[in-house]
Length: 178
Image (tube, rainbow, N blue to C red; front, side, top):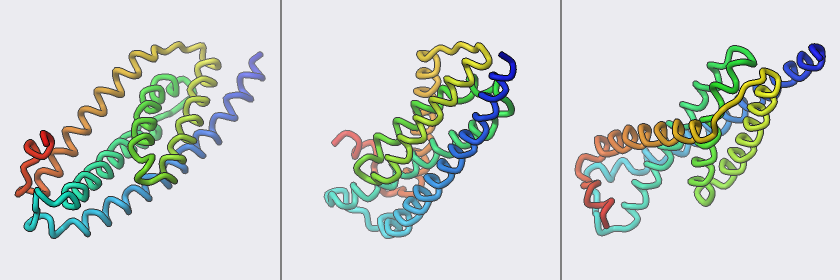
């Protein structure tokens, strides 16, 4: 039985490494898209027209990319904090809903990243299940979902604050209520 557990444990490492490599690729793509949007939107800092839908869409797209990037960077930090097989069921479960949320947001905007994020969530889910089986860990999905919701809300507030500072002439409260 111990030999079987060791062999299963050994197979987690390459899968986790693949997952972090995939996450790095996705972060690079989203980061580049966010930087491109920031560059193309720089004129909106001073020349924002709230009646122009393209201006609204441009800022919203930048906000989505910034939000996605922050969530994925947070997920990367959490993933890199894994030190052994016992830490996997403690660290990863709340990351999976985060990844799925970002995948859904990017579905039409960046389909290739959305697809890679879906693949990533499947990989991480299987790693969580296998590590839990190896360590006899149990985890509460509702607790993981609660943690994810809290993280999503915190990151949303942070990103909204950054975007509103970046575009001081835009009344975001008014825009959100139109």
